[in-house]
Length: 280
Image (cartoon, rainbow, N blue to C red):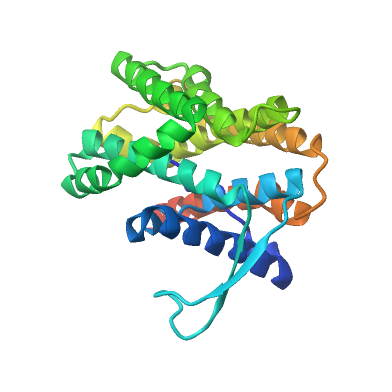
């Protein structure tokens, strides 16, 4: 579903790289504690962003943990964990579950179906714990399926579904920050949908799969690339504007790295692949 919200490591200081990695490791540790090894298989950098964001906003105190793992068996790693870590681990699992179910429906991938079955009990447990958030995810999946079946071509309408859903997930609590976090998540969600559709549009054309950008490309083939970049830039501008309204000092450099640079690393990678194809 996601995979677009990451840091730009080349523009991050060594100290901030270690801090970011420690939150990532902390998320991995909570997934293992709450769901076992199968939980760690679902680890996402997108949720690392959410941990860093909420930690900075609520000025949470971290518990620092030293550990070794299968990926780094000979060197101890540092994990940062706090009270939002379990929340982000739960959201990670719930999103991954629906992503696996969606892949099964689209690709008939039995491996995805099997993994979804394995984590179903964890999903149901977290759904009971976070009813508002799971309602947002399930409504998103249902409405998205309806739009796909209808062949909806209004990209703003379809992308808005991801925005509404992610807004509810980023709003950890229904408190004074609820509205602003929903706004930040709304525009980030629309950006994610647009980037995902943009990355897949050529493949979806060949396979005749649903993708609302196919209609835009057909109608504006000459300006398609420019229009896509403008839409995504607009969404991230609003997202960054919302972030700047939040009183975040802790880890602000890491968060700005992600919002102003990191989210575009996938776009740059896509451009590089397109350039290589045209040179062949």
